Length: 301
Image (cartoon, rainbow, N blue to C red; front, side, top):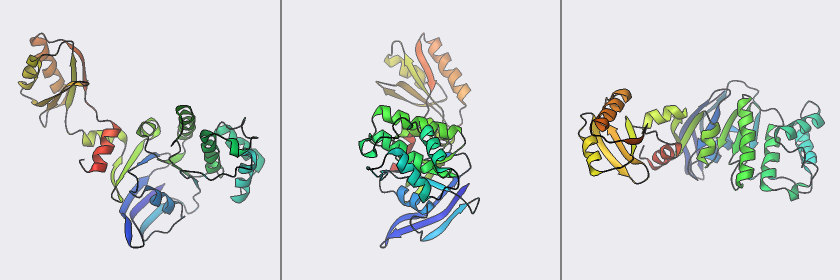
């Protein structure tokens, strides 16, 4: 669908992109992450041909690719109502079908049918975002780019917008979702790219990233009654590398390199049982997207 190779961009001699590479397949929902100022908006603007690149390639699998773009703060005309604005968008993009029917369709998709006759200046932030998404969808794009679509929304408005994105994802739309709300990315994205210093520092499916950065097998253990003896017992297991203790997570036991999950789990359970230590819960430690994001953007991973 989209391949970006060695993309570079500078502003007045100040480099922003240092050779960025990115890939999307048709139907991907790509969580595009990174700290403020790392080059995400510049990348999206180059994809949309709003600004020019200095070097590199932006390659689509077809010469005739339609892109729908929702900027972080969509500029809508407050004196229009929702129907008038979307009819206007249809005329601007030279929609070749029935504009009235398409306007009604995108209003239905975004849940804005009931509020469509109200003036936009009276809309809530969530309604503005939904109309902005409707405009981005209007021309039946091959690629939809959403820049911070849930920023500054209250929980209800955020849930409404995320439901729209979820439905679009289920319908097979190809989406780039740029957001700082990592829980939203985990809900809908099947692929993730994390930017650092003007390049994609980590890219892949979420489960792939977790396997890549977890750094071996580890177990979280919570006991009905935790004592110093517990750490001693777990530390003496021949496959144990180290033990960490946390007030919230209990004990985390890390296995030595090359130890399999099943082997380590069995040895830990056997050691606890032999010493009459009753676990309340045992689970494999998995990195969250937030932990991966912070690790990659800080350079620790």
